[in-house]
Each structure stands twice: as structure tokens, then as C-alpha cells.
Length: 270
Length: 165
Image: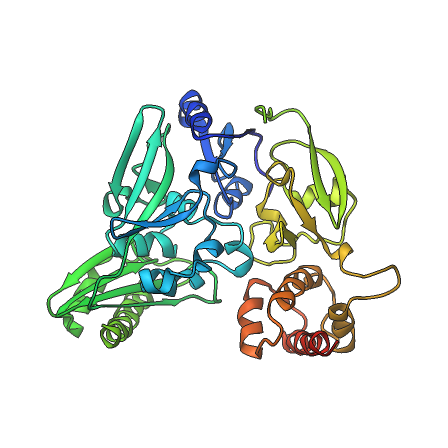
């Protein structure tokens, strides 16, 4: 359980981080809070030759609201966003989901963007970002681009980020009038990765359900009529698999029941 | 900071329990190993080494965090508190430590240092926690001996004594 050797570079500016990533090719990893990456290093599931630490890049800090979205910079820790006074008012779904992200002791270090970057299929923040049609702001030496969440998550811990890019920020759309939100999760211990996590958004008659922990990435479905049959069909289409924590059958059952409860809760809040 | 090469040791300077200290670390060295092997602070325990069990919890820049999920090089320049820093003076325990002793909130003691460092921070920020708050907060720690009941009782007792003090 010790990481393989790597060089370490603490970037002092965005341009320094970009230059380091451009020079390293496919061998670099970006580190911020390290709460997902360090265990991957220790288990040697990740073996970069150089770590580029962006935590001291001042340009990457801060939470701000602009163009009806909450922009969260790369160095913003999960605990910092959770303590942001406007969170509940600007985006209740994010406020409801964040306490489920890890434990107090990991939220104090882990960043919002880092959780998105590593794209664990059970992680809450990629799920919320996808459910809300959020965006990821990527930048490199050669420029900046915005990628929609559903295009960003490309598979099991895989994303559309190119090797020379880092995540500068993620943006979560603010709540709109008349929307109701709910978030629920089932895990063996509060704070562990979800066996199934559900986020629901209700607007007038439209229901959106997003599910994490089942497929290789967050999956979103919009329902005109979120009947039990429609929910069962969605659960069946998710290609759940058996693993150490739960069987595929159990996961499908959780999607139906937890999904139903989440949708009904969101309706009450609309 | 220049690029630190993988195969060399680099001087890490930080503050631990109010004292400026330094030691040498390769970039891949975890903060747990740095504390224990380089600084001799063996009160911080190493359990799962991937952030699940909570035994290695310390305070980094004023917040509880896993030392095993932090590289020593990341902590360069940081302010740390470890379990060695809890007692107000040699031979005297803190209010929280005393409460743990009174309530038998430990048996083997392996998880205790991490739990103390989390609770020390929590009780400094929450003067009147409910049992439910404490259980939620302690979900980041695994104890295989006590069943948690005496730990929660000790934390409630310590909170009350700190309020009354």
C-alpha cells in the first residue's frame, strides 16, 4: 500500500501547471485534495511519473455565481462549498448531495473538481453535475473549452479530459423557479461509496431521475410519466452487475424503490 | 518550488503541535509514514492506508483529515496537530482524553488517536452536539472493540464539561 515513485511539482500559477502537463505527455496526474487520487496511487491503480499539484494556484480558487450557474474553482474543497452560505438557495440538489460525499475528514481535503475529474461511477458529485446538465471547464497551454457533463463522463473512471488539460472549474446550473429536487443514497455505512445513489429533479409534470453506482457512469432519464413500470424498465436497462457489495438484482430493486422515493420527495419540494 | 525528483529525498518543513519541524521525504512518502518514521510521532496509527478506517486522522491546517490520504510533500508548509499535541502538559490529559478514560471509550486503542483528533476539532466547533450529530460525525471512523456506545458517551460528557468550564 505504498505509491510507486513519481516526481512532484507544486505549480505556483496556471501557466506553470499547463506547461508541466504539456511536457509530461500521458504520464502526468493532476493532484488537488488527493482524496481519490492518493488511494489509487497507494493501490497502484494509478502510476503517473509526475504529479502536478494545483492546490497552490491562486487563479483556481473561489465559488461564484454568474450566468445562472455556480462556478466552483479547482481548489475549492468539498467542505468549503458545503459551508458556502448561498448553496441551499442557489442549488438545493448540491446542498442535499454534498453531505453524502465521503466523511467530514475527507471533505475537509477533497475538492469538488477532483471528484468530478476521477469520475468514480459511485461518486455523488459527477451524478449531480450530470443530473443538472452542468459543465466542466478544461484548459491547457493551447486554450480553454467547456464540456457538458454527459459528454465529459465517458466510462468507468474515464473522462473527455485530454492528457495536457486540467479542470479549471465545474459549473452547476442554479435552481430555477418551480423546480423540486431530492437526493437519496444507499451505502453500507454513511460516507462510503454508494451502492445506488439517486437524484431527482421535478419541473411541472416532467420528472428527471439520475442514477449513480449502477452503470459505469451516471445515467439520466427524463420521464413524461414516471410510473412504476417506466421506472422498472429504466432499472432493467442500466446493465447492473454483481459485485462484492451487491448483486445486480439488488441494485435494480434499489433503483426502483430508492428512485420512487426520491422522485416523490422532489415532487413535494417543487 | 522546483520539481522534486522521485528518487531523491527532499526537506519538508512544517509545524507540528506548535513546533517548527523538518524531515526528509521522497515525493511518494505518505504523511503517516513521515510522521511516524521521520518525526518519531508514532501516536498516529496506520490502519487501512486508503482513507476508510480513520485511524490516521490528524488535523491539517485546522481541520480533521486523513494523514494516509496526504503526501508529505503536499503538507510542506502546513500546520498539523497530532494526538501528541492533545495533552495540555506532561502527565495531564485533556478534558476529552479524561472522558475517554472515564467511560472506557477504548479497548485496544488502535482507532483512538484518530477519533480523538476528529472529536477534539468537532467539540471546539460544536458546543452542544446531539448523540445523532456525533454518530454522523464519527461515521468516518471504524472501531472494532467498543461498539461505539462508550465513545459517544465520552464525547457527550466531554462536551458538557467543556461547556461548564
